[in-house]
Structure formats: structure tokens, C-alpha cells
Image 1 (cartoon, rainbow, N blue to C red):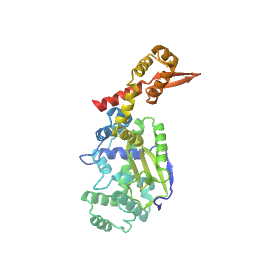
Image 2 (tube, one colour; image 1 turned 30 degrees about the vertical axis):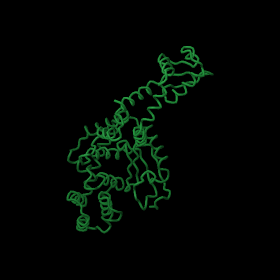
Image 3 (tube, rainbow, N blue to C red; image 1 turned 135 degrees about the horizontal axis):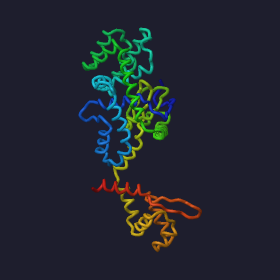
Image 4 (cartoon, one colour; image 1 turned 180 degrees about the vertical axis):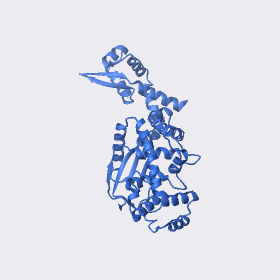
Length: 358
């Protein structure tokens, strides 16, 4: 561990963690509460309603992820009851039991071969993570009576008490059951996953830019006295819209659309200036005629000048405005500059205008 604020060794990976992706996916499905979003489609509606982001901005980003989510949920051959047991957050805990057990699976893949003291340490670490209590809070627990006293003193719900005592007695069985579930889920997940190589690389680069050597730069509201000396940052598909720091495993999951959604929220928080600028760029008869002339295909400045009867300097001035707004693209060939209409940008502008006014 190190003091908060001092540099740490941070590794930024360009690949996802399939098991963690499936935990995010299934945890969302079973997240309790009237206001909870239990699938990506509900998250999309939530973001659209809360931040006034039009659906046409979000659908291209989220539809491929929603298809993967639907495929896993529809084909995972595990009972609803067992999934709910492992993937439902309980009480005030932010995470489900699955995270705690997954960390134990990674750290002690051969739990059955551990000594009695090693098993006790693993159980206590798993319960500590599940209960979200301070490090070493369960060091004094050496028998079931110690655990029951701790649970009663900390005001845990009956459901949480039952889960903790069940883990204490049968940790190996729950580890094995979750391992089987995650193997099934990750198999389905990877089977239906599109190519996300470029997206993961972009996310890793952005995460490195934002985090640097200190994660507290992006986790501003976390009050952590000590931090691990090393952290691994993973791109995260199923947690696409947020950041998550798993302290028990020294991992940060960085949402692949965290940057894009941040930009969209800013864009639609005050869209007027952007719309006015683009309206001005086409709100001139000559510039509108230029756009219409480019509808037939690529032209150079001289062709447009002769066609519209405008001076080359005037054409150049108008083209600067249109290219700055993205309505026209330019290509240099020899000494001539050729202009091409950019239909996707024009369509997007009209969609944004429609969303703003209608």
C-alpha cells in the first residue's frame, strides 16, 4: 500500500476481462430498486431522458452491446434463483456476492487444497469484500460464533447474515458453482462479441490520459487514505458508462463510452451555440447554392466559381466556413483543392435541429 497522492504503478490494458464483463452484465439484470436500470436499453432511455441526448446519438453506440447482453441472458442455462443469489447486491453493499467470490477464485484456484488457516483467511477476505468493511475488520473471526457476533454488532440484514454463514460453512461449494456459471456466461459472451479491438485501444489511451499515475484524478469523491502500489486498468463494455475501482483486486474498470457520453452530455447541456453557428454557415444564399452544386459530385474551386458566377476569393471564404462546420470535405490534388459534400454531417445536423425544435 502507499499514501494517497504518491505515484503508483498503473498498467493500462487494451483487452477486456470477460469474467468481469459478465458480472457487470448479470449484476445489472438483478440490480434491485424501482429506479434501477436492468438492461442496456433501459440505461439508454435513462441517459436520453436525464441529459436530453437524442436516441440517434446513443443507439449506434449501445445497440451492439445490447445484442451481446440479450444473447447471454437468453441463452445462459442457469436457474433464475441461482443467478439472483450470486448477482443481486444486498443491503447497502454496492456490489453483489459474485465480485467477492470471483476475486477468491482468481487468488486461490485450488481452495480445496489449502490448509485450515489459509481457508479461514480466504473466507474472511471474501466476507470482508462482500460486507464492504475495512481491511482487517474480520481478523478476529476464527469460528462461526465470532462471525455471528460481528454480523449482529454491525446490524446486517437477515439475508446478509444467512449468506455469510453459508459461505463460512461451504465456501468451496459456492466457489465451484460460481466458477461454472462464469464459464458458461463468458463462453456465450465471447461467442457473440463483435470486434472491439480499436474501441479498447482508444479507451486505454483515454484512460491513461485521464488517470496518469494517480487514479484519484478521476475518482474525485473517493476518500482513500491508502492506495495499492499497483493497479490494472481494463476497458469495460458492460460498464460502458462509468468507472469502477475494485479495491480488493486492485483493478479499475474504465467504461468504453465514458468519454463519448461525457462529450454528449456537455454537447446537449447547451446546444444552442453549436446550432446557431452551423445555421449561420448555411444561412447565406451563396453558401446554400455551393452546397447544392456539390450535390452532383466533387468540384474544384474554379468549377464552382464559373458555375455560380462568384469570384474565387469569395468561393474560398465560403468554403472555409463550410469545411470548418464539417459540411464539406477537401482533397488536395496538385495545386487544386477539390470539395465534396459531407452528407452524414448534414444529416446529423438536421437530426439535432429536429431534436431541439420539434
